[in-house]
Length: 146
Image 1 (tube, rainbow, N blue to C red):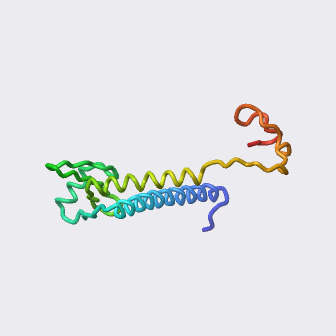
Image 2: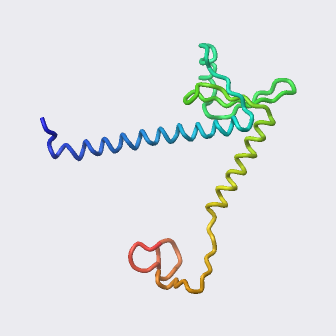
Image 3: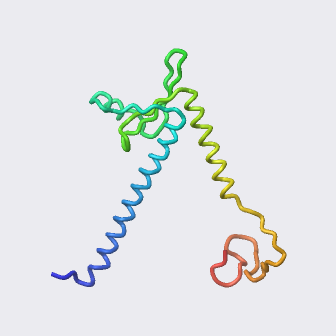
């Protein structure tokens, strides 16, 4: 039995929504994986939750957050991932500091890449683009403006 024309747009909308949701889940998993690659690069060690006891303990920790553990003079940081790897990342103070430093350097590099550049070109005709008045979307000439 062929699909009737009135139902086809609704089915296409559901298919598009499903595809979008699946892509969002994949993106979140990729972001967590990238984050965990950075942990490993900083010196964190992976500890799999490969026993019933470890799985139960892993579920008690806040997911995708650092937890600090002080034991005498030793400080360790634990990062729980129950979703992607089902594991803990365990690192020393040195590994945690390296991770924070690397993240800060990456943020600075990202900001430098996104920074607006001053454009100074005597042959550029700004008037072709309309006036630049006060406020967003006001005074930018006809149409949508900037």
